[in-house]
Length: 323
Image 1 (cartoon, helix red, strand yellow):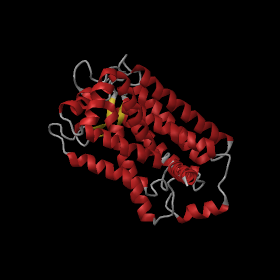
Image 2 (image 1 turned 90 degrees about the vertical axis):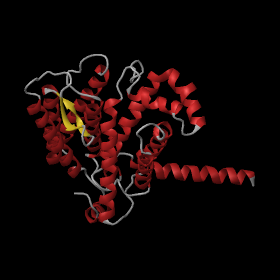
Image 3 (image 1 turned 120 degrees about the horizontal axis):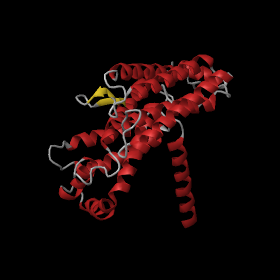
Image 4 (image 1 turned 60 degrees about the vertical axis):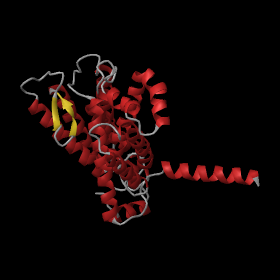
């Protein structure tokens, strides 16, 4: 009986893991799939905006602000004492390492949700991160605890939805789409953001802070870019649009590969410079996250251009919502 119990638990765990990493493209009414995708993107924009103030190298430790200040609330305004003890003794003494972990996790959440990549994994991580934030700041001054309940609930909805069915790399991974609509949306968006950045940075083309595409008032931003950063975005956007028209041919694969490489290198350059020197592209951690989104979309399409979806898949895709 004991062996049977262990085998059952193992089987259930394996089944749960397979479900978690599988594409979130279960059959659903078109309206439900679109609504779930819209919620997914909204959550991605939330995480993308909020990585900008996670600033290396000390993440606010020396000045007592930023991420350090809000993490410290877990100790000064405890929600759950055991969690407060962990923060006090296991996190604050190693805060710079912790800051990088938070930056990586929240950037990954933004990229995965916005691009529809491993949607269920992103939703599960988003739940965990929302709980951790709630346990840190829910009782802090001027906080509204219900905002964290809503964050947890929104990610929970994504976890059990078909949020990867529309404009996502999950749909490509499942063989339901060739990714053309996804390429066009991200290509046009990159071109628009790049154009706004170029025009907005003309007064100071090489500004280290760049021109912010968005605003702090509605807490919505796609990053900051100077003239160089804007030009890079225009180039990536053009390559994505070329890929959407060239398809699986050599020209399409080359354009997608070029877009992925340029976007990834640009994002890496920001991470290397942020907090240590003036970024040559005039960006922030939000800018780097946005560039990584472009890289992920291009890479997902690059990996699929040589394998056309099966006829049954194509029929299912046409009866669903993408496009």
